[in-house]
Amino acid sequence: MKITLKDVENVALLSRLEFPENELATFTEQLNAFLEYADVLNQVNVEGIEPTAHVLPLKNVMRADEAKPSLARELALSNAPEQENGYFKVPKIMEG
Amino acid sequence: MELFQYTAHQLQNLLKDKEVSAVDITKAVLARMDAVEGDVKAYITQTQDSALEQAKAVDAKIQRGEVISPLAGIPGAIKDNICTLGIKTTCASKILADFVPPYNATVMEKLGQDTVFVGKANLDEFAMGGSTENSGFYPSRNPWDLTTVPGGSSGGSAAAVAAGEAIWSLGSDTGGSIRQPAAYTGLVGLKPTYGRVSRYGLVAFASSLDQIGPITRDVTDCAHVMNAIAGYDAKDSTSIKVDVPDYTKALVNNIKGLKIGLPKEYFVAGMDPEVEKAIRNAIDQLVALGAELTEISMPHTEYALSAYYLIAPAEASSNLARYDGVGFGYRAAGNDIVDMYKKTRSQAFGTEVKRRIMLGTYALSSGYYDAYYLRALKVRTLVKQDFDRAFEKVDVLITPTAPTTAFKVGEKSSDPLAMYLQDVCTIPVNLAGVPGISIPCGFANGLPIGMQIIGKPLDEETIIRTAYTFEQNNDYHKRFAPLGEVK
Image (tube, rainbow over all chains, first blue to last red; front, side):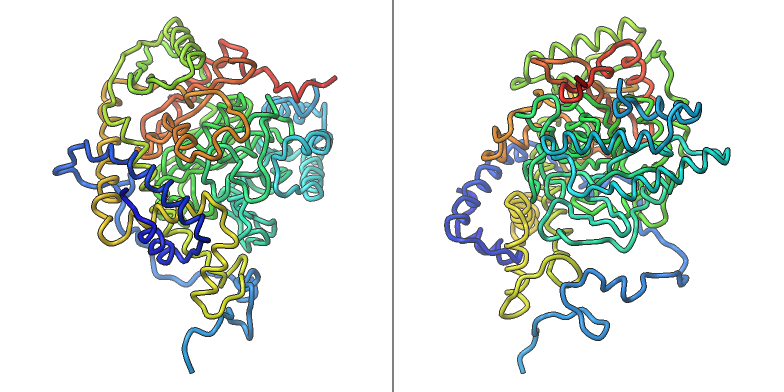
């Protein structure tokens, strides 16, 4: 076993997901099956090999710092599940 | 032949000669949608009314003698993970079921107002899957055999074109999501070079791998759609700043002297013998047409799938963090903000999306990052180097697009790994960022077989020329799915 039920519970918390007990067990089984399959990567000698995060030889794409038209506030808020006075509204995040 | 069965370039000629109107064409496609959509389920949203308005506007332009673009008046379908101004864009996810983008993706702007859009096509939720069975709403079916899947994740885009419910479509391809469904439905599907087509407005799955591309009935239409959508975009920081050629100039029926590489690692156990036979037969034809064949080795191919299924979920887990019930999309009630996040995401994401978020989060988490994510990125370098070396010797590579023809609905849905293995021939192309096209090259038991032609970075022209030459010497692309037979 590469990953235990307890690990999966922790990953769920990091992912902001929650599962009923039986689904956690299924996920544990399926993640293990994949991670065992992915063990094949350990056969590869990667010493001295640079990682490729993406294929383009691009770094820090810059542009002039000029003001351009942006979305109107009403449009930016148009898909919000809850809004108030021109702001996104969320449940309480602090005590008191 | 019915109007909904023509290619875009044939219809364009009919329009120019004033033999039909854009409204005639659009009405034919809309009637076809009404007739077969119940079986095929290619669409999430239909835009029939606005399509007719767009068609009328094109007819008015033609009447006034104005020059129209090659896709003007020709009904197309757009994968529902591409943002369309004022038209629902759901990603086939309950979390975005009511999301109406306040802006257009760059490809929509480039296609322009002359284009007729008939609907937003179904997909695997957030483009994660290879069968469209992971759609949060309903699966699409393959018009060649309704008991089989149309492939995925752009399964709706492919099924719509194969069924005559659209003449052409846009898909997106992260690990094969344009090419594999094109193969399963007997169509042409191109994944452009990474950076060739703007990703602005494409809802992100794995940002270093995603590309938008066309699904069409023949290679000529593919070139026309590419002409419309390719090019640098300041709104996409990974867009490449180079001139775009006229891809229709690559529609040349001549491959004399073309160097084709056959990577032996793509012809391995598990492949359907009928698929292998069709590909070998197609390669023999290309040689007879003047190409030179070299067998080559790409030794890291076998590791690509594992690397991909760590890299893509890792990027997805980060990209999908934005679905938190605050700015847009579904929100569940919760006791506090973290509870609200958890309930929102758990109630509205489907199983495969959750599985990939979990896998990606694990691969990126402290203690496992080096062992999984970083190692996968290094293997990606080696996969890319295999392509660099191959392209020192050859102009294009030829492989099957998928190891089998379309599989049965439900056949692989309980085994994620079996589903992932369908992408084994297409995934390395995304990891390397090079372009690849799938074209029909035969049939097995009445189901289409796809051949993949892979090119050098930014050399879509050579794969289009190779594909066009094969197509013009065969008739596979002229067969219409049985559902399309008009009695």
